[in-house]
Image (cartoon, rainbow, N blue to C red; front, top):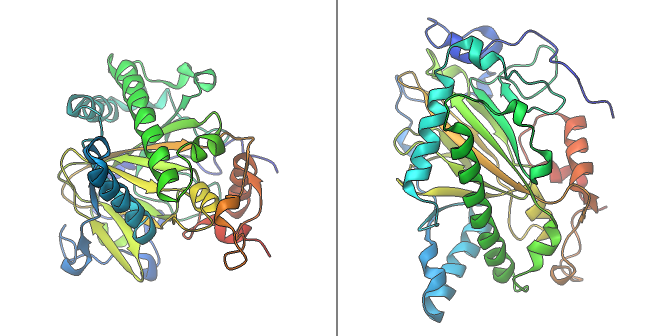
Length: 356
């Protein structure tokens, strides 16, 4: 399959549209896809809710506390596919440092940012769209995408030099998030009744990347979305969000639940590859982002993924005559190519690679 080398149309930075009186037509979603917002910036009360909050300090407690913590993780993965974690080991200073350096980057003069403009070939760098379909309805957001690990694939030409502390802060944050993901891999493996090293072996030499999402204020937030409904294709995602400004919505049944921020917490969500490996015991859940008229919002998605070349398939221990394998065997690289062929979408793409 050919990978597009360039965007199909000239790129418009959403940040340049923040002070417009109206949302341009290219960003207006069909009525059925628009968020249900009250006038102004408030969200409909029926749509707000809290994800499970899990204190990872319980993993270091006594046997009963450890069992309770692991049960909470298991329940969250089965019921929500998302959960907050606190006492996660990432320092508040480092988290705040990430917010500061990346907010400062997006406030640089446009010419400084344009030096890192990306293309659909790798998506690395400064971007404002994800799909390559000409004439597609776009999302109300800009972003910066970086490869973090393995170190051999880092392209430092795409790493901003300003602010001066951005590179060191981002590297330190990436190292801490990888440590956290290794812990979560062990917990998820054990909660499935498998040995703690199962997901470590399934992932192989894991890869990690970061997408910093910048959602400018929007003159008509009821007409558009910061990020359209989707499921994450990789292994797991760890999200650093704004401690005060809401935006993330998670699908729960037929409803969109607006996630209440938990100061100091990180959000973990299951990706498609873990759904495959667990034979859908743990779910990759659809989510989206809404924007508001009052203020900008920044979030950082850390994607922790299996090795590109290892085959991913349901764990043999989770397959029985009553629970046959639901998914075909594919490498993560093959899965990503399959996603590109299908294009951006809502429900998890694993729906299209089910066994027959």
